[in-house]
Length: 133
Image (cartoon, rainbow, N blue to C red; front, top):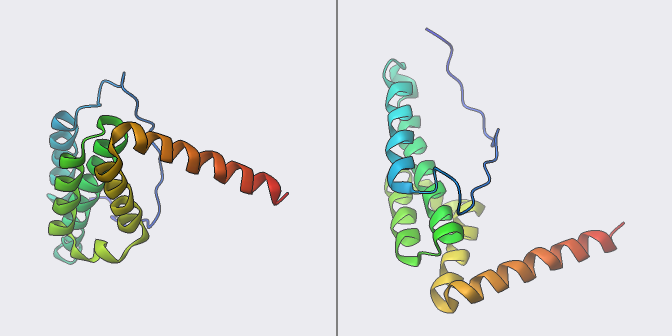
């Protein structure tokens, strides 16, 4: 058996776009769930609490996908609720707060205006960053 450890940072970033073959969460979530099930199949009892946390992060990922790729407010809300179901402590993270703001903006302004707000925020961040040099 291999040692098992938790690393509290993202090790990879995955850029998604409309032409990705894995753009469908209906395909991605079951595949990621299978990975989690296999991973935790032979894990010691004291690490099993991480299984629910892993399912939480799958749903956070799916919610971001629903927001940014699909522009689907209803699915984004559903996946975020699923994340809380698996790991209620997610409510107290900056990731949850950022995602909640994004879902709210998407719901209130619609997908076209959400993209405009996102673009404005991204460009403004670049200007602020450049001015600090």
